[in-house]
Image 1 (spheres, rainbow, N blue to C red):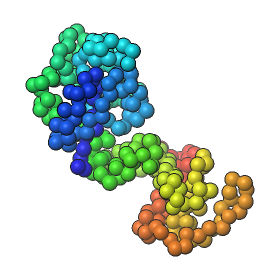
Image 2 (cartoon, rainbow, N blue to C red):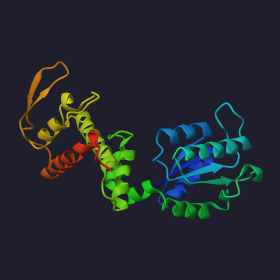
Image 3 (cartoon, rainbow, N blue to C red):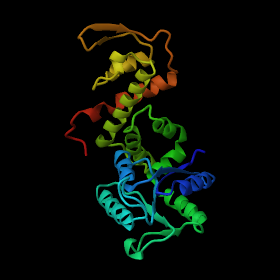
Image 4 (cartoon, rainbow, N blue to C red):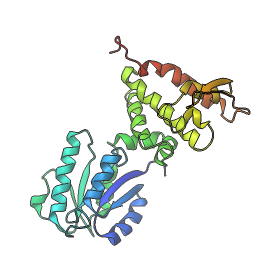
Length: 269
């Protein structure tokens, strides 16, 4: 399904989540399960663009060593989600519970009840997802999203593309600050090609810097020379060239038009 919704559900009842994940899939919802809040918090911080909605249990576990069915699980989760929002990581969340103390839930937090409210929960998740920048991007460009989420392009590629996508979606003029993320996406692309053996490692391998000019020559089937890590000069040419011309042309165009982003530009606003 192209327009899937990524949900992080935090619940210490593994059996319940297994059943509901199957039901949620029929609504285009992919549930990623965490037994403990501390584990969920780490996932959110490490990849803040992965999830469109967070579903919290009313009583759960903070970590493997803590008590189960603990109301402090929810209190800690709500507190830390508010802190993350202050840092720019704002993911909508709801509470899905069999029982809870009302004092632990804020007045503006939507609450659903296990056993009776799952269909309403799924419908509300769909509503929340429409406000998700990442969800809209995945819906409009599903093949690009899947390429980023399969891990080959690296964990930062989604954030880089979302930065660029904001300019596309809002029809804004590309400014100086938008160019560097686009250039970094080219580097991620080259690194992925090197990992699968389609680019020489000296050109775009594990080094900290990518020789994008050399990559451009290689993708376009042109001859060139490259200085290796040992300062040797290496001649190269992709013969036969395995890259479709449309890919090589797009790479050249983006590279040529993002060069300014890698340098300080006093006149840029």
